[in-house]
Length: 224
Image (cartoon, rainbow, N blue to C red; front, side, top):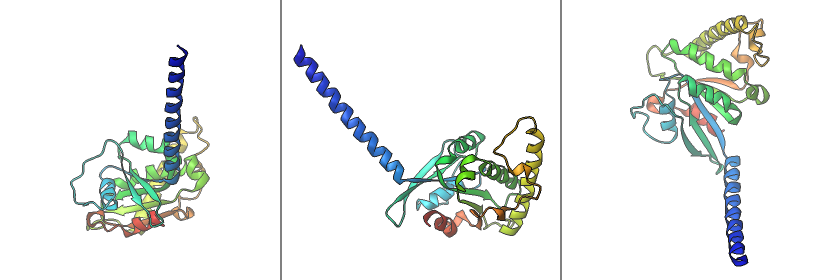
């Protein structure tokens, strides 16, 4: 009887040892990896950008993603970075905001040829800016004006102007709604001056075209 109990104790001890070792290895791997989130509205070109980053053909026909896609990229210093493509549906946008503390950097992609995407991009940016993780660590954000190959695509100066207008609309609407439901993290709505993206030194706007994998500025943002 004692012999059987001793064997069971030994087996459990060995199993616990290997489980602890495996868990420790996962934690170490995660500690060495940093996450870069690609966010944006539907049809902005997020998944195509992910294909370009992973050296796949950006002309592959993509559909609106339901679940996040991700790839792991090797950096020149032998470290790796995980890039996560967040789908543009409302549920996944909310999930991203709940995980924003895991972000090393954020790439905000918009279809610069569609005026309707400016408002959606402004809403995503606004929610990032009022989040506690951003306010604490000023996470670097790259706003990518995708589809610059199209004739009617907005250039950075014009897009910045319209983006500021959309942020102002959000400020006014949230100020009216939140007077009775206070959100102490939302400092933007109390700003008297018009929103100016230049007051955020960690935000940069670039013009790119994922169609031809013309993403040099994105790669520079990720690997620097």
